[in-house]
Image 1 (cartoon, rainbow, N blue to C red):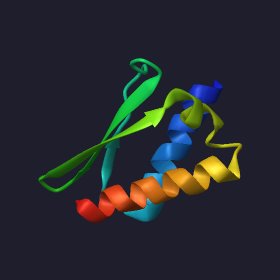
Image 2 (cartoon, rainbow, N blue to C red):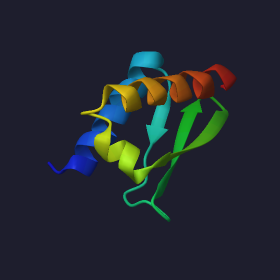
Image 3 (cartoon, rainbow, N blue to C red):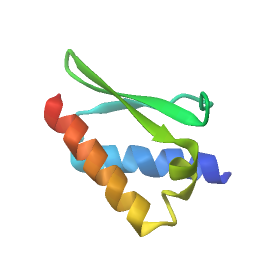
Image 4 (cartoon, rainbow, N blue to C red):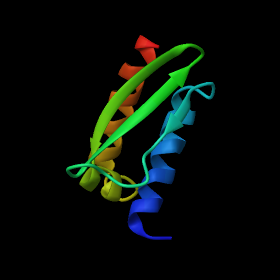
Length: 79
């Protein structure tokens, strides 16, 4: 498993850790070095953008992990 796949897996784990009922869809490839990630809960959907570098470094960098957890929590709160 390469670093990008590890990062995507970790991102999905973060989302499930915040709210198990939220479905997450991460594109296969980034667009302009950004991933447009869909979070869905029931009929509500929220899109967030995360840089490719942040996804790659997510499993290894505590600072990035903390920032991503905050972004996910804020997005889920809107759902």
